[in-house]
Image (cartoon, rainbow, N blue to C red; front, side):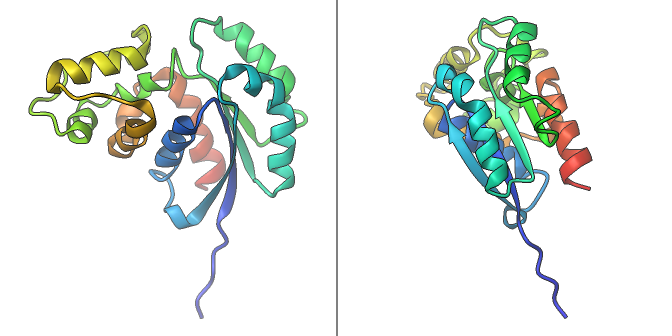
Length: 193
């Protein structure tokens, strides 16, 4: 007798579609694609995300999501202040199965963590230099663009390449980013059990 496993629904709230695609690629490192389904809300920037995240989280839980993740780049903000603002909008007491993730400075810093992934994604002749602390890079999106151009004379476009880079990036590389660790821990302890 075959047992059918129902896909778990995971809610994602993020600033843009490429962030959703990156998170989807990351989730697929923990589970098979048929083991989860993503429901999402995209803020198209941080302003709308901050304004609507509480309502969106409620909607996602109402739609049957078991877990909801909110992704908001730190950019030039103070992490403590930004986290306090988001925790006020999505309090753990009201949303116990939620997690606020704040990549430092942008999610693209996570993508800089794996030189092999960059080489493979852009079919570069040589591997980019290893960056010891990707989260110290100022404006990682622009840095990534300049890096890819300087090594391979290829154009980087976050909407086209972030998902591919994330698919090629290893979890060990991502775990070098401190802001990734709460997501890693949450997934291992609450989803992949």
